[in-house]
Length: 391
Image 1 (spheres, helix red, strand yellow):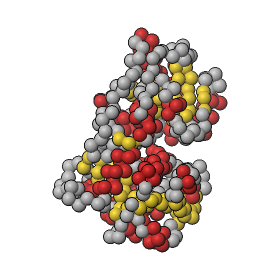
Image 2 (tube, helix red, strand yellow; image 1 turned 120 degrees about the vertical axis):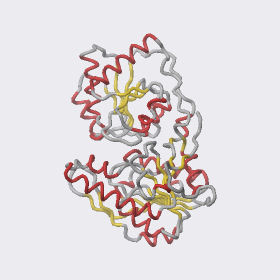
Image 3 (spheres, helix red, strand yellow; image 1 turned 180 degrees about the horizontal axis):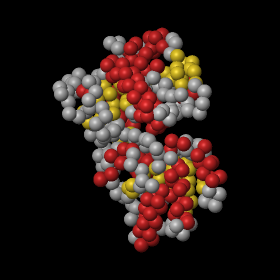
Image 4 (cartoon, helix red, strand yellow; image 1 turned 60 degrees about the vertical axis):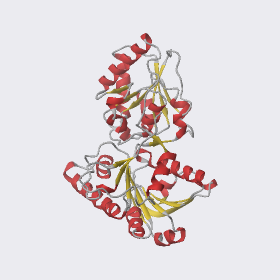
């Protein structure tokens, strides 16, 4: 099978999109399938060098980056028609709504099977990331919906990883949506760490790139309250990754024990050393890093966002907070519980919540070529769902 992935997002790896594509490429290689990725140069750097040794072709287009801090990019997809014709893919898998995506959808219509993964609500993301005043946010919301509808009208199926359907169920192409649990690398489900003793020094942390939109400031305000108000100092904080906010926090809080790992190929050993994962992002729809941590039996302290929040009533060792003071209180209660009831954090249950990429890949590629089991729904009330693994 030949699959062409399309991505030209202007937001750097939002919700792990490049990780998502890398994982699909790896599964394709294991299955003996051939893959090509069409992207833009700045984003292509994050579709890692894995593809070079696995015969995966990465084609990039010229682009213009607007001046200023936000990585807002316009891509010029010249020569795409020939690229698609030369590769002649069985499936074109689209991961964004930008200029590459809309052109690919138009070129593919009626000639190739098209899958579109809706990773986020693009208009909301643009408004938040680019700090658009409320007076003008309607324009970005309207633009994102218009661009997405170009793709939806030509897509055979839409993969949707969110539990909340309120924002999509009124779309006229809603019958194409297939709800699938967010996928993780299967390694996260294997050989899960068993904690046997209360640590002498608690290790809290975060996994990902510490950009301003991750809200790290709120996390450290809470940790500072933990130190000053509750007089608890036996902890450190680990950034599994890097980013400007990580270094800024180390400068701002010089008396706090802060570790920055920089980029690592395998995050599991670092996640397994955490006693708590803190998610304080300003806006994330899924938050793959929190899912990865939860699968590894790490308790989650989170603001009210992400896929785990959608399932909060089903989860053990999942703690919500709003303000830094809320976070500090939660951490104090957690530490006291651990001291009086060791091992209370073990055995998080994730039944029917998550799948791995092998399952997603098999479901999606099979879906494109089944004509009897998967028919468009008449007057649908919810998208078709895929049954997931039990762990």
